[in-house]
Image (spheres, rainbow, N blue to C red):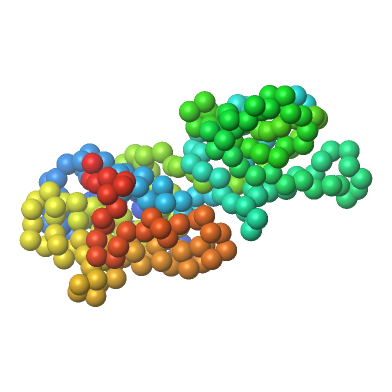
Length: 257
């Protein structure tokens, strides 16, 4: 169901328009609004991205000068959450400048913004960086304590990609099955049409334990968790996985709206 490859066998990834046209064709109604289908597919993608898949990882580097308590220059607008790197929960290591070769390595951990502002010494304590905060509202990184000298920190984050235009290839398609995107559009179209096939195709996508249907999406999630969840516990937290008998994750709302 993926777009046909060209050249020397290389696979050409599809665009949002490709997935929508294939999904509507399979649903048997190519006259439905492309814009509405795009909104539905983007809603699905945004919901899935918030599950924090390992391929949403991105490395951020902060260059801090002495006396710094925050950094807006290196802020990344796609920041969703920190990607835990170490078993002890730390985000990474850095070499303290001026330490004896090969250099003393220090670790740092993440705080929430609430934890940071609760610290009475957040602007008075001075020393090597021990904590970092990603503030999506203020669009900057906070560090604690205030730096006593210049530091360079590198750490990984989960990114939240922007909604995709019709001509875009979504990040999902670069790492996850494109067939799922086509099926999402197909299910959306059948639901809009009030077609009797909707229940069956929905079970193909989301699964249905009553008929022993594992579902395309839950199967992919379990595959990722089997690899990622074992070594990086915060990734794809199984506590937010919906039941196999349907997409019933009411905490995140309906994926079609």
